[in-house]
Every structure is written in C-alpha cells, then in structure tokens.
Image (tube, rainbow, N blue to C red; front, side, top):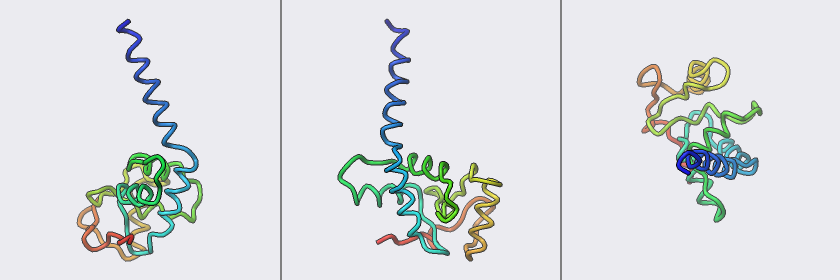
Amino acid sequence: MQKSRPKVDRLLDEKFKMKNKSPKSFDQVYQVVKRIPEGKVATYGQVAEKINSLSLRKKITPRVVGFALHANKEPKIPCHRVVDRNGRLAPNYAFDGAKEQKRRLLAEGISFKDEMHLDLDNYLWDSD
C-alpha cells in the first residue's frame, strides 16, 4: 500500500497544476502584463495578486504566472517586463535567456544594479 502513495500524490499534484494552468488563467496573465508600461517592471507575485484581486474564482500563484509567460507565443505581450520578487531576471527567458530580457529592458531605459538584478524601488510598476 505504501508504494502506491507517491503515485497518487503525483497524480493529485498534476491534476492541481492543470486545473490552475488553464488557457483562461494564461489569458488573464497576458491581459495584466500588457498593462505594464514601458520603463516599468512587475513581479510574478504582483501579476498574480492583480489577477486574484479581480477574480473571486480560483486563485493563481506567481509560479502559474511564470508558466504562462514561458508558454507565450505572442510577441506583443511584454513578458520581458516581469521579474522575480528580488528584481532578478528570468534565467530561462525566451530566445537568448536573461541576456535578451536585459537587452529589452535596457532599451526601455531601465538600469541594473548588477548583471542579473534591477532596482525595484525605481522601476516597479504601480498597478493601482
């Protein structure tokens, strides 16, 4: 009986992940990310909070925001404007990884504290 428990846990975990990674959830992420203005950034958590504040239905997590951005195929959605809670770039950003994300942010006038981090105090989007 003990051997089947991990398999059950994995199946329940996968069912939960798929439930929270629906196309509608991804579309909600894209709608919020489209609102981030040039020269500003948002965190994964900030995007999730914004979506959750607008919906009484299921809640999404910052991780789901990351899944949605990674799955994005639409070049008009400014995914490069989303960073982690510490202002760190996404190491697995599309195309050339964090280098491409940094290049796009530099082109928008955002400066960096070091190779991978920007200053959230100066560039964090006020979504209200």
